[in-house]
Length: 247
Image (cartoon, rainbow, N blue to C red; front, side):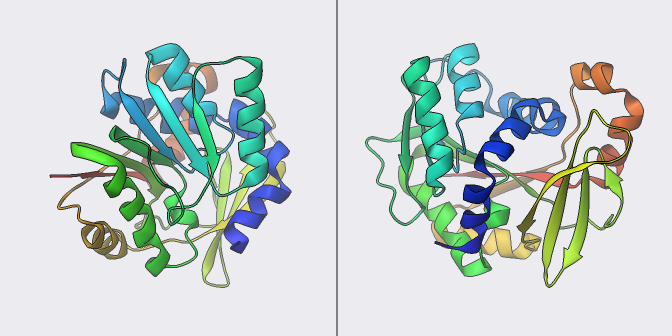
């Protein structure tokens, strides 16, 4: 198991609790993906790197999607299954990686939210795209939130994050958004792959249609936390949306 996965097993409960209330996930990442997905009622969706299943439960309960999710971190999948057992929504979870996952049937859409950037290297990145491509129907899309290849605002507070360059990787300091003293809740390491590395990885998997989009918070997020909280996020764009389509 790669260190990129081990780090989430060691902080699984803390990570899941943080993401549940994280404004960046709930007012930026998730709404952007939902907008791109459009009407998902009854659609079969694959979530690659689903974590504890928070987004899957949202897509199923609020939007009527049929979701299958997998993740390499056993502790996070255990949390996802625990919640599914308590409040059954029909979501299927498994401990898998892009190499081991075998889809039962085909999916109309696939997604990943801040997963690809935790690939250990550019060669392994191809596996994520292969996993999505194999599982998608013709015309299906793989929609991924990633760490922006063009991001440069290191060592500054961006929303409730501070990104630092460390030994060739990016250290993400997750801050308590409800605190004014920039309290660090936990840290994680990811890779800042280049635009070309993502493009090549997607093409090697078979994807030809590739698009990029910026992310902006929804109005509810601005109302809840104020324009100042989001200003650096809008200006610096720490995240990007990568959309690939199976022709």
